[in-house]
Length: 268
Image (cartoon, rainbow, N blue to C red):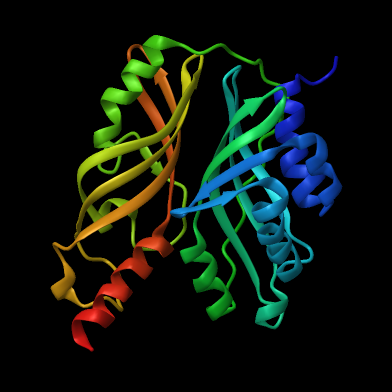
């Protein structure tokens, strides 16, 4: 039995390219026009913008490893929940493990556009403190699941549920340490950047527009109520016409930087 093209390209991204530190793998993993949307930034073009940025991270973490905890394999896209971990040469060899979710649109069996959110806020904390977070167990067979077609009923359930994601009991934050995502933002509206379904599962990238609730120790309490945007990536399970589980990663570092910039402007 051979891997499906969808599983092969996702494994190629996580294992052949990132964990193996082999830039030549992108020739068959990514379309030349590949774009990555992450943390409010767009890396436009595989060779022009994406590869130089990724090479810089691989230089900083020369032993970087990607551990995959969950995958979605669909005809319209693929997604994975993962932890990146390794020792930073810029931080005296201190070790960090940071979690994230990424989803991709495919073109001719290659990655064409990626949307991701990784918990760089936790990475920054670990590299400063020298205390690394644990890595959860890997998925037992992340590349062997069936490739499922899109499902309109799943999409309808997910889209109607997404405005509640931050406070929903089904939501599991893909992060370590405080503050929790729900504690940071009171959402007012949600903008869906991308969403695909595969049977009873879905993956989505979102921008939550709302107001700051508080939660960051170094952000003045007077900034509570200020308008902010929090970017999220999610892998969602549906059963019986309802969402039963949502794994959610968020750009806490980007939100933190928004608020620190506002704080400097207000109190200078």
